[in-house]
Image 1: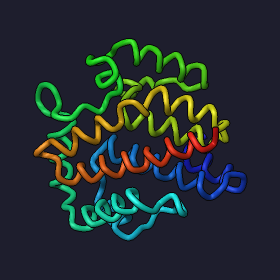
Image 2 (image 1 turned 30 degrees about the horizontal axis):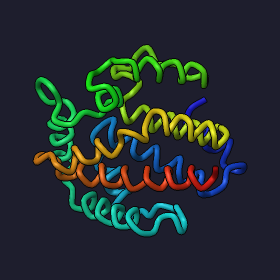
Image 3 (image 1 turned 180 degrees about the vertical axis):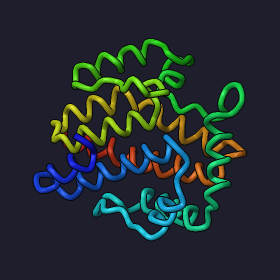
Image 4 (image 1 turned 120 degrees about the vertical axis):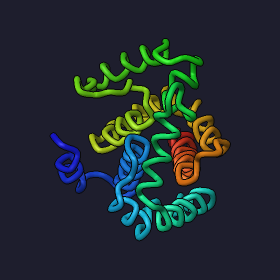
Length: 206
């Protein structure tokens, strides 16, 4: 089942705030996986997230900054920035893999634990996938699919707390401190603000 079909199928059964969460995870996954297209930048520049009262405060501020950055962005320059940050010659300037932040190295124990959890949840890696499963884009996509599939909140929380919570602030900080990050420092700030809302919401739900 493709993502569009899944979203249509569960749209009537999920609360609007959960659909909004899934959409935000999808946006972040796309932004970290590949340079945004001109069409995506234009869409962001004209859109508003639907997170209700939870969208106030730091998230609202991060979204306004992100929108402004998208509105004035040149797609070619953003593509060059993406490649400089995440795929530079040698070690990338900004790492986007959980195992690096959790263990200090790529392909370490956190990745093995993630693969076990993904298998238990019924997820498998595509044979054509070029990145390890602990790429931030892949983790966001798993969260999106958990939400759209109606997974229990405890299941969503366990995955998020195990594989994202402890290191996403480090990724956002790295983007904020890297001189070459212009557009993507706003992406990092937006991701951190959204993930902070997720942490707070999961804690309230306990």
